[in-house]
Image 1 (cartoon, rainbow, N blue to C red):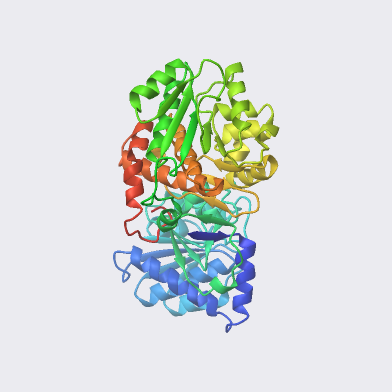
Image 2: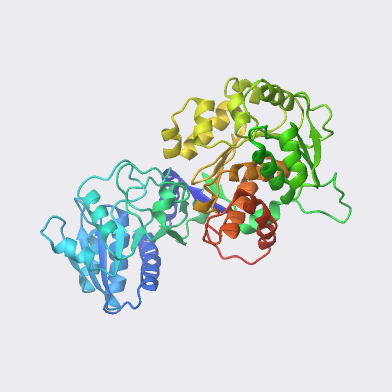
Length: 495
């Protein structure tokens, strides 16, 4: 499992480690790792042109020392000194190695250097910065964004809040971010994650000094270890029975997709309950499901289940409201999605129950539940998912470009799998079925939501294979995604 930390957590750990080391040791460790990554990105170091964008802080010092390493190997290194001050030892090392320095605003020299570079190193601001970039940093970030050369960010891309991933105004968009000591939360959460590119972690000895993480991200190995597996003595009931209350005469497909997700995610039995039109669709598509046609909004005849999936395509009329009340009155875990969330938005106290509740909103649905603005949620998904979990007393799986799973009292989890092709109708219904299936198999709400998001993203990649996909194809790719968990995987944020 990957762990990530806020800027304050990192700085506290760095101070504790630096107290045990000779002055400058930590920066040299970081710069050595940074230089190695930069060298690997160049076709050859000798004769290459490297531009360092250097701010006043330690990130600028890291960039200068790394530039000195590259200059000693024959690279032509130019440092653009944007800060009000400069790391003197780093600059001296660079100049001694044959590098040169420039000040921004000195005509076209800086622009030409950036445009002609083979590699740009962003050392403008570090993990302590917040808010929009000021000049000359903003202008340099924009210039770097128009250059053909790849950008390597030091610790975090300038303009990205290291603790939250928020971006206010312009920000550097890096091909690679070389982060020191530990992952920063803002590198895992959009929009910061989208600016970070590939993340390379440099070990500088910080591990023993780090506290509990701010956020975590599941890996292939941790999902494999968490997922329930059938044993020799398993039968369909021991493997978990999930009930699905979804779909309506208007939205029949939601029922089909939610049931498909549940069936492919390993539940021993899926019981579907709904009105006649979606019942016919589910029976035709999934003969494995046990189907109950509802003449009235009651679940009394459905049979025993160990978890419920409630809401996709259900509608919000009287029938739907009654079904929501009936399901939430049961004593087993319930996943609430889509129209189920729209119903409970009128009375969020319905979510306060003894048994676990996992909700799976997108930003608009969470806005209706909490009263926050949708744009604010999209700009700061981690903060709003945490706040909603505490306010509503539930586990929140907030869908978006970064999927966040939040539960009060636990580090939030972010998901590293997926593909933009998943942004198509019906994929959320499949996700609900997957998570409900895992709830029925005995996982807690946090694990069920996290593993479901991981598998859903992995199945989406398999189904898309670089091209558009359908929601049904995601459900059908789930077995391949689960099988792939047993494959050896590289240490990657997006395996």
